[in-house]
Length: 376
Image (cartoon, rainbow, N blue to C red; front, side, top):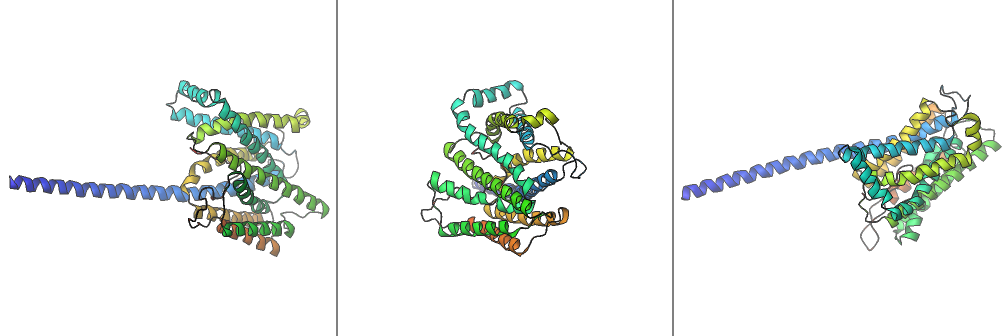
């Protein structure tokens, strides 16, 4: 009996060791998998930030498909509308796959979250409208500003997000964060007055273009900050998935984008057609904008704040480098100082705070252009 008891204990001990070893292996594999996703998300963030801006600048300054400035410029309003359609169809395809690849289940999901949720759909019309306006402003800004300058000026969305968070959510910030916003503003001001550009302007017209671009960026930063905070305020605690949320927002966004085409460009569409100025490069811009935002929204939760700051800083540097090589961009001393201040401000803003009654949520940096936030 004693021998049997000893054997039983030995077997249990062996099983316990085996289980601990198995758990260790599982945790190790999970850590490796998480690291791959984490650094993969960094590459995706940088790629989305830099790629979209550079491609859009290229297509807005080289009107025809062969890269020359001859030919008609495509309409930004039609590009935004096509992007919304592409994003909506992509989200429907993902939900279709997740729900067993049956049209019945897809129809049921859409009915539940769209037709049977009129109040939530009504609330989502506000950010949908703002995101559509923001995407149109992005085209206007990159028509008038070089990619590097735009990339830096658009960091003003950190300032607007902070201000709207403080006023709408009652969020409090540390002295370091408020100081970072002052540094950010100073950096943006230096970049704007630097006069650096990727083309030789004729003075007065170039100043007008920069002013128009600055106005577009300021409006885009305001819509980005307000819509993000509004989204958080009305949908706090919601467990709706990313894909369903984008379907919900996609429906009013498509309607608003379609209305924008005919309110703003009806005459141009009637004379030259809906797809005037389109080329394979323009289609690529629309695809990157539609797919890129969704990819970043999926992977951004895996990247910590340090990686987000690195991605923002690296994207600014990369935009400057590629602009210098492709667009003949020549930054001057004021631009370099301003860019350095903006990069410093992003690092200061995302520095972890000590827990002394300050709100800890909502201090992550707003990352991508028109990326829709979700609690799911």
